Structures are given as structure tokens and as C-alpha cells.
Image (cartoon, rainbow, N blue to C red; front, side, top):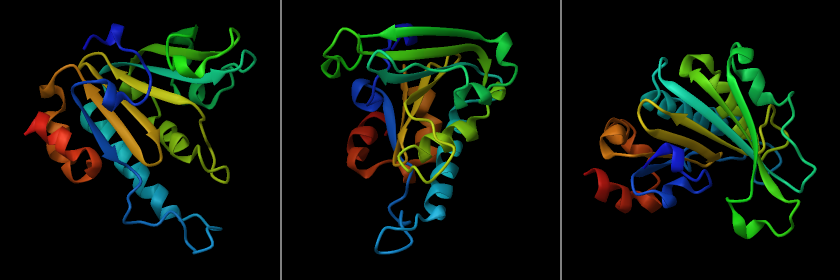
Length: 209
């Protein structure tokens, strides 16, 4: 897998030969405190963030050369603003390379009109230590729950150029980690084996066992 040729669209796990899909929001902890679904259980979100961060730090070392790609669907009017929460989580942002682009080559079935596209920003010349990763992951986990802030609607991909790894937290329930070779994910597979999504475990075990 060449990172430069990778099509950044979900689900990464099903689009690549080598990857692991993790359960982030655990079934063992209820999302709701009550049977009427009025009160969200904060312990669910705390555990989801703990898992997401642990997985990230297992495959991203602080000095690794990385980039972050963030994208949103646009009807032609919606844009990624300079005040976006993501930008505030990058240390010394002005010294980084920031590229904006529009894409019609992903999720092609969802694009019907010429004005529709996916707006993308890629922030590069980063090391993992430049990024407040916990804040970004927390915001992504919160996205489907309006009562919880901060939130970061859209898709966020962390790309590790040193190790050939891409990580995507696709919602509060799960995370995909893919790589160009099995060796890059062996340690992750062993360390967090109990968090692997059971639905895909057979496929994952066939690659790593």
C-alpha cells in the first residue's frame, strides 16, 4: 500500500488487505444511564477515549513524521473554516504545511450535482508530539451526540509516514488501523487483541496469526 495512492474514504478496514478494526465504545458499558435514554453515561465516553488513545500511542511514536487529513461533505457552500476546532489542536500551526482541496473521486455514489464535493484539508510537516491527539479523538467520539462538546463533524485520518500506517476513528463505536505490511501492526494486534471487533475477528486473525 502506497500512502500517496490511498483513497481516503471509509471504511478503511474493508478497503485494504492489512488492517485491524477495533471496538472503541464497549458493549459492556451502557451508553445511557437510564432506560428512557435521556441521560448519557459519561463512563462510556471515558472508556472509548482511553481505548482510542492507547491504540494511537501504540503505533504512533512522538517523533514519527505524520500528517492529518480532515474532510467534510459539502453541497458547494459548506467549507472548512480557519476557526475549525482541528486547527486549534496543532502546536505552532503557522509553521506547518496546510493544503485545502476539493474532491469528487471519493464516495462517488453520494455526489449527484456538480457543486457537491468533499472538502479536504491536509496538515503536514508534523510529528505526533505537535498534535493534541486526545482532544481530537475526544471531539470525534462526541460528534453524534449534540449534548457533548467539543465535537468535530467529518472524517479525520492520521497518517504515519515513517511506519506506513493510517488510523481512522470512524465514530464512537470503532476505529480502523491499516498498514502497508503486517509487521507494522503486529505489536498492536497482540497488545489490544481483546478490543478487536468480534464481527471481523476471523478475518483479522487470518492475517496476523
